[in-house]
Image 1 (cartoon, rainbow, N blue to C red):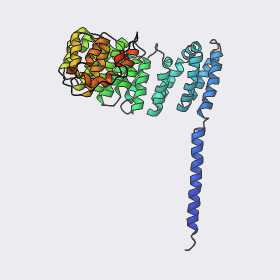
Image 2: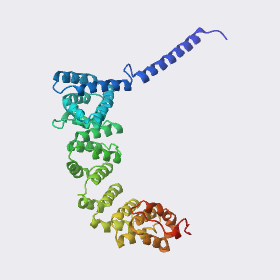
Image 3: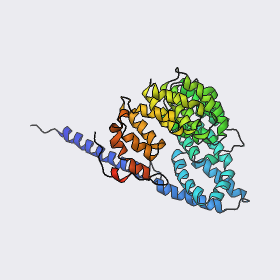
Length: 384
């Protein structure tokens, strides 16, 4: 085989490139493109912040100098991340000094908002993340119109993570109309957002939640089901004033199962006597298994002979999930003697739930005062 120098040269170049790539990756991972590692940068920012909060508020020259430093450094997303970690320490260790510090830096944070509003989405998301964790940086005495408009306009081209942060920032700012406008975009563009995640964002709204819930319900009935479910879940967590308002929606079969089950959960938290016959109807005349299961759970708040009869009837339902839910609610509603009687009632498939009822001892022990099963049932397997 003839000797070919080109092969060795090629192999040598390939090895050199591999070594160079390894060195490059090492530098990127450990030094972040020439910046100090995050812990090191956080330590530097903590030192700067500690020094700043110790300075007298009357020292305006020092405050101005610090604000210029913030504006210069925090326009970089990596520096903003390090600063956020350091500021978190100040927030927990010196809460009063933290509030004074934030108040003195309102102008700088507004200027940073303008800067990041012109940046690519990934950098804007970093700033929204900063607002989510430090809503105090938002001066509620000033209008954040430009930032809000930028955030809302960015939703259309955002991913799920960015949308979550944008909505978190809007909720931190605390303007109800901006949140409604953002969700209108999400609905119009059929963008995905998990309803529980959205609910959690809405619950942390810093403004007047009653105003927000009124805005959301007045407009949200025309949004897609996923967002409407989030709105109902949000209202469920904060208000007991929608019992009468929700009832027509529950009666309206044109609404999706998801929406109606969310409303049933509302009635499972806030008792509303007029809805009891409707809940019993979902159990006795089941048309949708999800509605039936949610109605069974909600009926734990509506004890009555009719409720007990409906739940016992549900023990004969062909679906195991329905029978299980019914037995679970019965455990909540019935006293010990009624439960023991139920175990012997073959007409209501008591034997089928015997295995579940054998776990009753642990359930009864968890209530106050603790109860116990009779000795004749201790360790006994019910015949099937």
